[in-house]
Length: 154
View 1 (tube, rainbow, N blue to C red):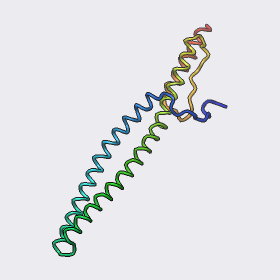
View 2: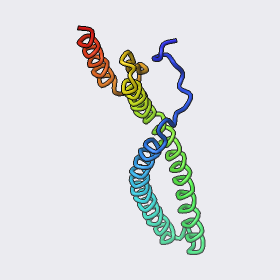
View 3: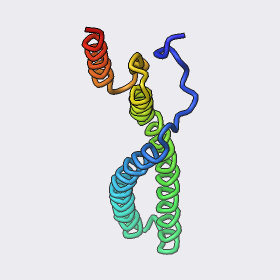
């Protein structure tokens, strides 16, 4: 079985790097979501309050009913936005782990190959999976090793 066809079993290869990247992306997502969520919550709440006030002025709604409807509306909006926000954070975290795996895996493989070369195994080559990042770096390292090996034979 070629290395490019191997099944990925460990998605946290360099857990510090991957979790650090996940936290950075989640913080950006968190900030953006809070700003957008708060804006939507505030605008819908204010618009609903204006409509409810007009119903009170028309006599279709009493003041106690206004407070109950207003509180229920804000609570419902906050609840629905919060649930979707938490689902989005979870999905973003899982996506980040998968995405960073394609970066951390090749870095790990390149380091491992370079360590083999340092230990005297000049025949070692960097082999990555087809969808991994850093394909051109791996090719450059392999060309360098091929060139070194051909010069060593001369």
